[in-house]
Image (cartoon, rainbow, N blue to C red):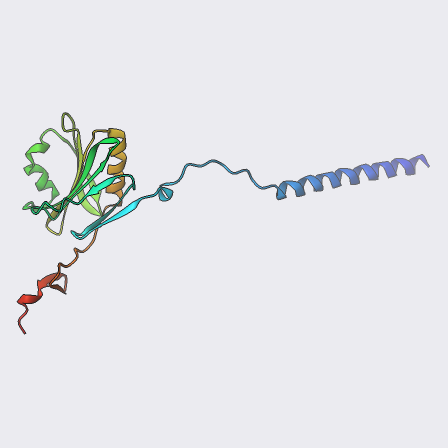
Length: 199
């Protein structure tokens, strides 16, 4: 009789332990994992797209002010970014050049004497990144594309702020075919003046 009681108690104890383990495991699988506070990724940071008819695009933060400098009739593009709370600026230039490549251009630029120059890429093209310390405190990257000089120049008043803007603009910079001006039409990759077409 005692043997049956002991076996019954042992069986009940084993069943109780197994039931408890199953119950705990079921509750664990139904409990949602705690959410982690994560920093937003680069893709989640808000940015605007600048699309210029001179043949390039780039992304920039929405808190900057952009001046296209329409009064500049010498250059193909002269786009200036400023921010009222951060001294300094960033300029994107598109200019004529007689240099055969970016290395030749760097050699002809007297203002870059004494600058730190490194090889890099801009919009998939070979480029030079130039840092000029001193009063100018200038950082720029330049490339030659379609026989034009494209450059991004940053005057580092507020160095921390403008370095980030410079990196965002340079990393997102892309070349695109220039838009035709009014009164022109495409012939292959070139644009011709419609008034000059003789039938």
